[in-house]
Length: 284
Image (tube, rainbow, N blue to C red; front, side, top):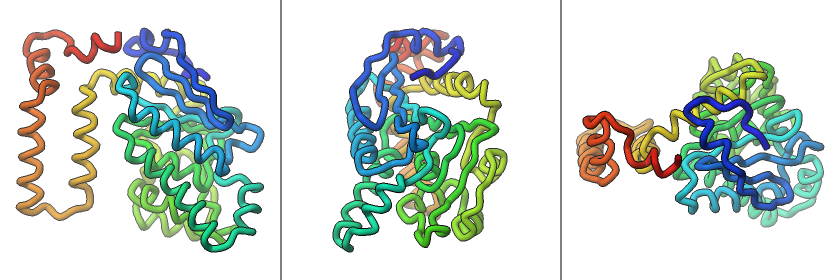
């Protein structure tokens, strides 16, 4: 597994030997402070089934517990990022009863929630096809970088289904208006359109995808890990909510708490002292 050419800010981290963990449907390795999680079913364009869902959930839970990991990159092996649900899995689901279908859907929803709620920054490296649940994975990540030739679709309605478990994350990313068009039509759209509607943060030529991801990683590793966790919690507390006295008081409490934290004090002291903060040395 490779994240390609290294930026100057990140090269020292990614040159370190990888610590790999064996899974069947995903690749998982840690390089320095970065965990690389790869969907590894290229023969079916990384479509997911119950095994991939279980393994990805386990990998995300392991990453969340590992204090040495500062950022996570989600990528796909082979020609595609993720083509959504595996056809064989869908055939098995079609034979399930309501109780079995509900349990299966909850496992998928749990996996998406684990990715969305991860305490570390997540970066989606998107190339090739990202369809159905694959688009949901992109929307769950904090940052999404795509190749110019990536293609997207919410194909569920064409199969008589709905993109239910991914909907909260996708609608948060692209808004209800765009979701109406693409959920209802099931049409494919380009990386340029994904960027325009807010699904992707950046699009680059395919040959530049890895170097752009590395640049983002370099920026992420320069920030305080506790501050990033607090930022993610802050966004969840503030987004799409009315600004009232309770919210104003809450934001004041949050910044006061962080200012008084060890990391907050160290960051300000490092800035004033014109030196790197301590968290830089811990990952060098």
